[in-house]
Amino acid sequence: MPSKPLKTFVISHENELSSVIDFLKKNYPNSKIFLLKGDLGAGKTTFVKYFVQSIEPDYPVQSPTFNLVNIYQLKKLTVLHVDLYRLNSPEQVQEAGIPDILPTANYVFVEWYEHILPWISEAVMIHIQQEKDKRIIEIFP
Ligand SMILES: Nc1ncnc2c1ncn2[C@@H]1O[C@H](COP(=O)(O)OP(=O)(O)OP(=O)(O)O)[C@@H](O)[C@H]1O
Ligand SMILES: [Mg+2]
Image 1 (cartoon, helix red, strand yellow):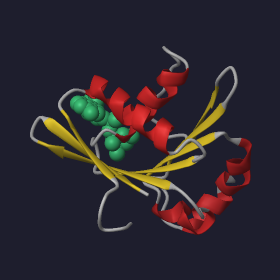
Image 2 (image 1 turned 90 degrees about the horizontal axis):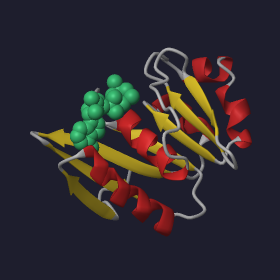
Image 3 (image 1 turned 120 degrees about the vertical axis):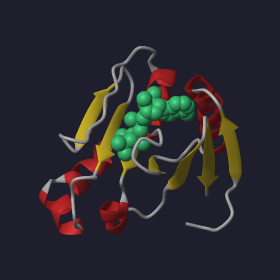
């Protein structure tokens, strides 16, 4: 991750994620893979929910912690929501068949992404930190 973020947002309510998502869509119109960094409960899943619902309001988005991958089949797009918290190595990512399905998606969001990095050549990084009642969201090119 580069040391200096391209952009930093400080938000005090999750509905302000909309402005972060607007920024991403405007500045990264061709980006497909978004890597989400942040501690347990930082707001990674919530970010994906807002992104998906910016395309299709009310579309149900849930944490894929137990199934590794949720596939959201929107009307015009396919979104993969990956959470590798339970995996311990790139070999396990391979065994789960995740690299094989990456090309099928228009967007891929990955929580706990470390072990998928061998298959990622270009991505936007989103770092979410919780500080008291605020969230600091940094975007890295
Ligand atoms: N930007 C935000 N502002 C305020 N509250 C938030 C924000 N983002 C998330 N939350 C709240 O924090 C809690 C945890 O969020 P979430 O499940 O998205 O975290 P996570 O980073 O995906 O955690 P995990 O690593 O366990 O998957 C939720 O109750 C959510 O409503
Ligand atoms: Mg999560």
